[in-house]
Amino acid sequence: MKILWLVSFRPLKNSSINDFYQSLFVDSVKCLNEDITFSITQFEEENVEVFIKKKKLKSFFKNIPKTNLPNGKKYSNKIMLKYALDQCYENDFDYLVYSTADIVVPNSLFKHVSKIKDENFCALIYPNTHITNGEVKNTFWPYYGIDLIIFKISKSKLLKFKEIIEHYNQFDWGINENFYISVCEKLNLKIFNLFKKINVLKFENDFQAFKEDRSWQIRSWKENQKYFINFLEKNNLSKLYAYGSYYYLLFKIFNFRDFSFKLALSYMIFYPYNFIKKIHNLIINLYKKTCKKF
Image (cartoon, rainbow, N blue to C red):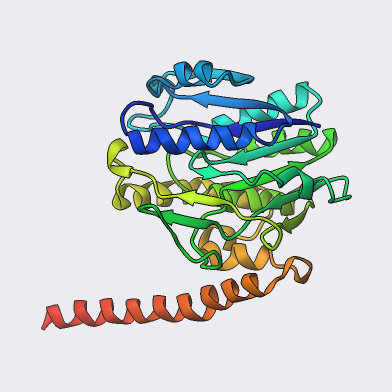
């Protein structure tokens, strides 16, 4: 099988931790022993091209100057996707994969994906198994993030995919999972969660190395939310993809077919526990603001 793997890399040699995670990711993909071509679109991130050559990656590589982006922006997942879809349409790839570069890909991934007999579908793995400070967290805990998504789509649906992203924009951090799951509805793709069969290891990035703190992420997410709402309106899709966050996404990928005890536990934690905790925090913050006025 032929696979196009859409990914981008952080600058190299800024953080030994991030470099190690990215190297581990590439090695895990190579261990799949499949015919994989990487679609790599970068925005002047340092030492990435050297890293690609060192790892001997078969790839479509494109570097875009940051001056081509709006002022102050670092990268665009929409632009990366656009080039990947062009490459996928012009060549005969069986699968299109989107992932981050801070995960370890399970070596049995395509053993399970190939068993799905639908002509068109989307397969993903949620939740991830998080590793923070070298410690493996609970494999069932519902952390935010769908970091590995596999598409199998016909040429006609691929063409439609190319058409609908003309109404979409995205810069820097956020909205990716929300966007990809909404695309599944627009393209009428069945979604398969492979969590009960395989795990994805997800590493906590060294965010200080590239100056992306939580406030930067929140600001970026809110900006991208506006672009995303425009996309949803133009494609007659629910705005809950933009406003409902993971509460809506987990609902959209829900299917009894994919369920296991651990996945049921994840849903129980995410909905009752997280929702109640969120409401509790809102009440506490509102109470503190009220007290300050008096």
